[in-house]
Amino acid sequence: MLYRVDYVVALVVAGAIVAVLAGRRLAAVDARRVARGYLLASGVVVAVRVGLFIVRYPLDVHWPPDLGWRALGDLGPVLLGAAYGLAVLEWWRGGFAAVVRSPDVRFALCLSTGLGFVMTAMGSVFYIDAMRAFFAQSGYSARFLNFIMAIELAGGIALVLPWRWLNLAAAAGLAIDMFGAIYTHVHNGDPLDDSTGAVGMLLRLVPIAVMLAGRRWRGVGLGAVACAALAVAGSALVRQPATVPPPADEALDYFVGTWRCAGAFATGRHIEARLHAERGAGGGWLVMRHDDLPPNGYHALAEWSHGSAGWIGSWQDASGLRTFRSTGWQGDQLVWEGGQAGAADQRFRYRRQGDAQLEVSYETQGAAGWRQVDTLTCRRG
Image (cartoon, rainbow, N blue to C red; front, side, top):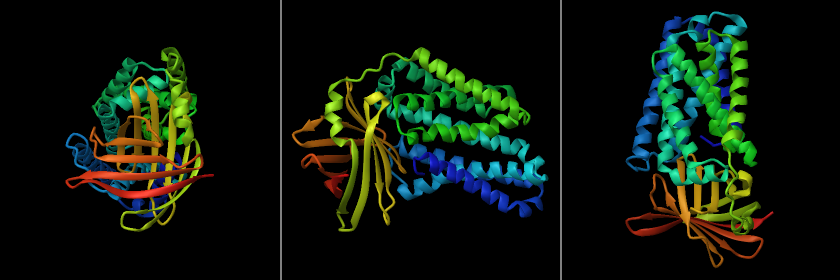
């Protein structure tokens, strides 16, 4: 799945459209079968996601390839959209009340959302250095990070337990958490797409809250406003002056702007890409987006920081989150080395070739040593 707000929303809308178009056929099927089918489909996607999470992170096995991860990540929002589509059908012409109010559908939504929060909290452990650096740059303490991770873990578990009041309380607490994440990115001046995960989770929490509250839309709306207000107030209370070291501006400002790139894979296949870098987190981080141009389809979001913890970087793409470290500029070269789950089997090299030209190369390490995957020459503008 692409880490973009518009892409996630498009997947949810697509799922809703499919459900609406299939409305006549679904109306002819027993409501219990439709609800159980939705639960089964959600359960299969969740089971595969959990299995691959264990393979990728605790076991550090980099499989499946990016395309497999992207397809798997797309299924969750599409299934969520189908639930929205069923609700639209009930509102529009009726006949689907038994489905949208079914305990099976509610449990499917709670299961996928709850385990999503649990995996997010557990995944943060593998990238704790980058998380601590981001929280510090945002003005939050390491204790607050630990508190957020505990809330997401406990809230995710609470969503799947068989007590309605606990489910509703967990949904409210997690909504405050997600509104707080969005507000933090807005306060930092980060790009909108940095809030993709939080927006996606809020889209999941809405139907859960509606079903748990007995379809009291006004109450859910007022509750959402209250959660957003609490998130903003809480963020202001716990935020401290951000620790942004002055040298970071000079060290990373070279990359700020738009770069147009062309190059080739080691196989000789041509690549063209666009890089765009800007300041985020109040100036303490450099946020860089990499977008391959067609026919290639690679997209990534990188975040770099230089502070008391050293040079820390993260890359997010269809394969997940990777963390990197660097020793900083060595002459005209900046090298980032790292990988997933604490590995150090990938390397990015950035070579300055004047103020308006940059060479970027990506390497991986195998049994035979380091191997170059691709190289790009980028020009500013």
